[in-house]
Structure formats: C-alpha cells, structure tokens
Length: 490
Picture 1 (cartoon, rainbow, N blue to C red):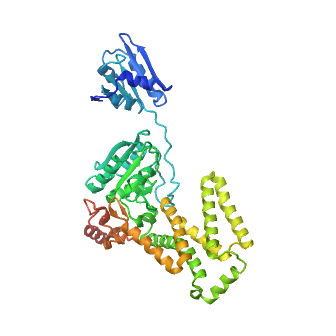
Picture 2: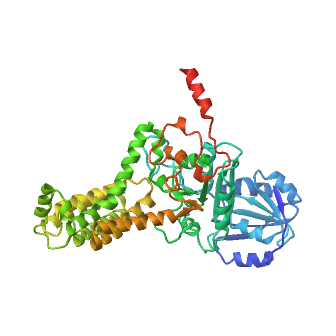
C-alpha cells in the first residue's frame, strides 16, 4: 500500500460525470453497519471474482476507517490518494474505488484488473527445430516474466512509460545494469518520450518513430518473438523495447548481419552454423541479383553467355514476344501477388492458393508464350532465396530491392547493376542504428567482432561482447581461465 498526493485540474465530481457517460462504469452506494460507502469501477476492466470474493465481503465487515479496511482486504497494490489524475488513471487500469463519502478527501483504490491474454505458444515467424519453443504473447507482464526467468538477476532493469494520447500503451525498456551502455538506454528513452501520437497499437509503430532514418527500407531495430533471443542479446549489452499488446520485441542497437543470423545457429555446432549462415547470405545475394543479371545479359551482353547456355536461352525465348525486362517484371509481380494472396487469406486457403496458383500460372504463362521456362526457374529460385531470411521485416526489404536492380539492369546493363549496388552500399554506410554504424563489423572493420558475423566461431573464443554496443563490461568471461580449465579436464 502507498499514498499519493497531488493536484489536478478536474475535481472528483467532474471526473465521475465524464466516466458515467460510459455504460460499463459502475458507481453505487453500499451500506455497512455503521455508515455508507461509495464504490466505483469499470465492470469491463475488473475481475468479478476478485471483487466479490476479496473486496465486497470485507467491505461488509466491521471497520470504521479506510486504513482498517485496507488491513482486511487481501489484495496487493492498494493506493490511498486524493489526486484525481491518479484516480482516473487507476480506474481505467481496472482498480476498484472505495470511499467513505461520495466526494471525500481520500479514496482507496484496490487492484482488481481483469487479465485476458493468450497463453504462451510456439513461435510462428521464427520457428526453429532445435532450441526453446516459447514465444512472446500480447501481455507485457507475461513477456517480462519470460525474460526474468532467463535472466534471474537484480541487475535486470525494467523502465516503464505510457505512450499514445488515446491508447495509453504501456511500453517497457529492458537492459542489464552494469553491462548495457547508458548512452543507448538514454537515447531510446528520450526518443520514446518525444513520441506524440494518438494510438500505439504495436511495436512496429515504435520502430518507425525512433529509427535514425525514417526513409530507409532497412529496419534499424531488430524485431523478434523469441524470449531466448532477447535474453541472449540483453546479456550482450543491448536494450530491448516491449509494447503492451504486441507479441514482438524490439532490440537495439543492431547491425545488418544480425538480420541474417537465426538464433538456431547458436544451438548447432559452430561448423554447421557457419555453413548455414553463409548459405543464407548467398541465397539473399542470389535473390537480389540473379533476375537483373538475366535481364542485363540478354539485353546487352550476349557475348558473356557461354555458347551452349546461349543456345538454350535463345530456344527458350524464340516464341516470346516480350522483351526480357517485361518478361521478368511479369513473373516477379506474379510471385508477389501470390505471396500477398497467400498471406492475407485464411491459412488452409492461403497454402492452396500459393501452391496451385504458382503451378497453374507458371505452366500457363510458359505454354502461352509470355515467359520462358528458364526465367520461370530463375524467378522461383530467387523467391526461395528471399524466404531464407530469418527476420520477416528484412525479407520484405529483400523483396523490394530486386525491382530497382531490374530497372537499372534494363537501362545500363551490368554497369547499371554496379551503379545500383554502389548506391546500396553508400546508403548502408550512412545508415545507423541508435547512432551506431549499421554495417559493423564489416565497416568500420572490427576484426574481434567478425567471430560472430558472416560465420560463427566456437563459444570458447567469444570471451568479449560485441564492440558495436560499447558495453560497460566488455568481457563475458575470462578466455585464459576457460582454456586452463579445459587443459585440466583433458
């Protein structure tokens, strides 16, 4: 129990007059043996079991003051206050108000919030065969619980605030004190305080509002639904952002290579993990470049194609009336339409549309002479390559990047692809995440951080935290002691 005092612009009668306009606001008088009391609450926000089993039976008991009543009610988070702003806020949070007079000086507020939340379930976006199978839910309390179970130390800090004039969404910033750089925490906190928006429905709103570059297609905060990944990254010295009502957590600062690292990589042998990570990176590069290279080669650079392959390409395009760029755009847009249709329809129907639609449209377009079978294979492989990205928002970026490369390939051939690639690199070099370079450790080059970038080396060599987070405690463990213990065991 604690007491709050303060001043407010509105009086209690004025607040109640506004709240009574809602049909679910309940305010009534109840009589005890000695005196009447007034009770007020929102019936849609209050758990009726708590109200009828823990609060009302005690109200009918033998007591004379609010302090005596509070001693009888077996509920935590009881507030005695005169501040009408606090009264209004707590009533809207699911508290029950009890007062000895209808508009007396002090009121007691009892927490009886009705919590309806989805149970913790399997990850849907970042599913993995190896490793934990828990995913975040929409309740911020449950999400913080999942993190505290994995980091059960007193240094784990949780700072909360409310954002949104209408939604009043609860937002929490999590970090490990003594490890996380205070500048990163301060940057996130100040940027969120500067948000002025009426409704915050999801963590993706926060991403767009506090990112360094709002006009970049690249996400500058890592989005994840896995508690194990958040716990591991907090241990590295990074900062997490949770939004009540969102099953996804934001992490920053982040780098480009992290978006191509699946958390399952850390559950596998380092050789296998490194191989799969390189396959992922190759698949993404293939997905972006293969169709533009096809358009450039057939439009400007026949001499670069081997003679045997050229015969195959010429024979496949013999009856095609469209130039390579229109042929490629037709297939790329068809793939995007199928992907969007499959995502927006119910699950079973969406899977059917994706499979049947792809087969029917692909076969029909080749037989009708609109596209060549070679390009159909290339576009299908490019689509598969884009699906290998572990983080969904980065996958959307990869899908978008293919189109400017296609246009430049049509305009200038292979030189156009080089120009577009240079623009892309220049943009990535300029991009930052919470003020930290987005291309680290590739540029600026950090040799020490390359152990967990393009490849993942054994845990025994990861004795230091990533340099890019500027952690207050850079060492994770003593590499010399670990080696000595290993020698002793052998």
